[in-house]
Structure formats: structure tokens, C-alpha cells
Image (cartoon, rainbow, N blue to C red):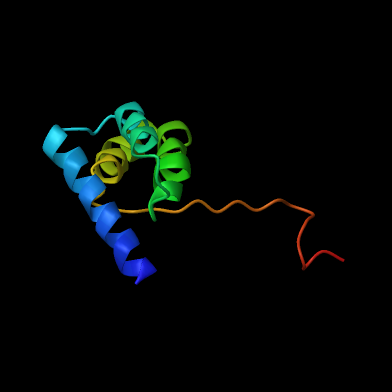
Length: 89
């Protein structure tokens, strides 16, 4: 039941972004703050889109950023730190 409610809220938010033409990352972040709700795509907005904005070359940004900003693709963010973790001896 919680999953279904969360999915419904998420879909409604993204539909609203689409209807209002919100594709700029800053506009989407402002809308997230206005919603004041934890959504399943928080990592996508807070980590994945900024990673595309700041850690890709121009060609990669042109290809992937519009898809991520329009929620046509969803991403996550994974970070590893050398010398840390369960495999370090």
C-alpha cells in the first residue's frame, strides 16, 4: 500500500513537471522542495542529474541530460572509495 501511494505521488509529480514544461534541473529541484515529500526519484534528482551536468562531456550531456530531466530515463548514483569497504585487507 505504501509503495502504491508513493508511486502515485511520484507519477503525479512528474506529470505536473511535464505539463508545466519543467525541464531545467533547478526548476525541478524547486518543485521538489515545494512538494515537501519524499519521492522514489529523490536520488535521481539530487544525485544523478547533477552527475550528468558536471561529470560528462558535451556529447554525453546532449544525449543523456534531456532524457534524465524529462524523466524518460531514471538513474541512480553509486560511489566507491579506493581503500575502503569489505574487500580491503
